[in-house]
Length: 247
Length: 159
Image 1 (spheres, rainbow over the protein chains, first blue to last red):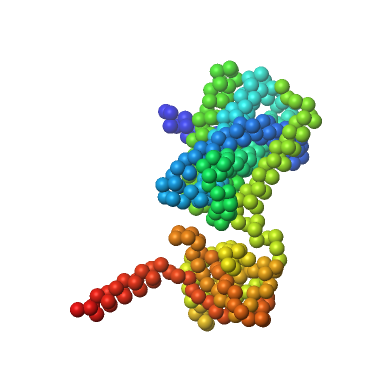
Image 2: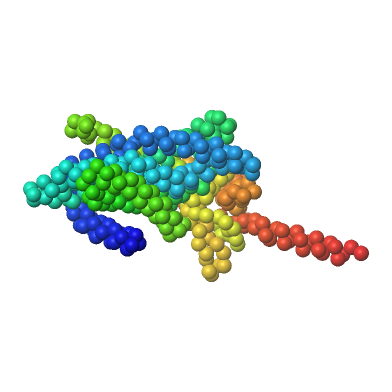
């Protein structure tokens, strides 16, 4: 019973995604809607992403230093931290934070619109809610995610530098030159590709759950919870697949 | 809840600029990519029997100072050797043409790099010149096997 429901839901989600993508041209025709959503998803998530990036970088610096010290190669700290941040932690942690910060906001906003009959009202005025409400939110998150992940990675490197170089005494020149010698452009590209895919998945899930939510207070709450749960699992699953393909 | 139109535009602009600045920083400062685009360079070719683990983009150094990067590595079937093209920074254009070039390893586990040892000739290398004196990469396995064989020979020679 549950499995058939789940499969049906995946089907609904797929059809919904296709319908949403088919209506994406609106973001080019009305860029203001897109800018509002980049603000909503991106700019408002910036502080939490920056703070988390800093702390994740500091932890990486500390853990990485302790690990590398046992092999007597602490000068590779920069490489270890940069690769970890660029390829995995940057995109994944940003995506999980994004699901909690922006995904929930999208779902509950759309759910509340549905609960207060705003979506029905739009339909009556011959305004397509998918086009007017859905598409800009999807593209806002697709555009915001890679930018947030890059900011996360830069702040993480700063944090690792503070811990590794200033506190633990790794040579600053070694830290950066070893990093530059072994980090390639493809590592940066891998991170950007991942975060764009995560942004797409998170946007599609959050908007879908919002539109599908029961138009009641409990319904909106449940939809918001589902967004976080489904998004988190989706991010980690996509992460494995993309890593396996790109490595 | 929603801020004024202008405030939204400013914050969004700031966010987008910050995001792209971060990507730019990652591409130019964290990868070795940004180091090779800034200066004009000239090419030198060198033939090696074995380049070991040398990779495109590896540093070319003289007396330990990086003067260029490895531009390309290919295999020449006629001469049965590896052809390595080095892009050397234009400011180091006084390299004597009897200098010799070798492939070294940075540290025990580090990557390979190309080292040029200056010669004494008054004539200097020009663009697309070929370096005649080359020394192949030291392959650790060869060293070990040579060492072991020599040991074995010593063992049988002694009564």
